[in-house]
Image (cartoon, rainbow, N blue to C red; front, side, top):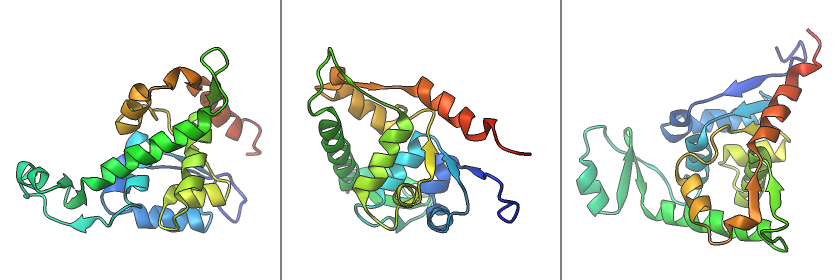
Length: 184
């Protein structure tokens, strides 16, 4: 497909990012193996969260309650420090504040999920991040459900959310335009 100069869409479920294949996707983004990346909200969150502190190999049988009491979360057979989720919330709130600077509820900042995700990749500035390499290589990232999961909760409880509008419909149009005029 690369030799044929085809536009390559790569889609991955969030567990690809959270449970071990993130490095492969990161390599693919770094080396431009795809032109468009589509992933759910968990794929976005887990990529950023893994940039803060290392994820450790655990076991599927670990007791979730016991882990939680000791400051860890289990995702499959991996464990992540709870602090990563605190850092993620701080990271998102900081970006939201930057985005709405100068905007009001009467004149809100309108941004697509793909624009928001590109800014996440720019801001994380970490070569271990898929989103970083997508940002660096101008690979559009589409996430139809960016508000699903932690990101949606953070945006919902953001005290200035009236100054921000996330335009999902524009991204639907944009992803369709990615392939509408391509040669067969």
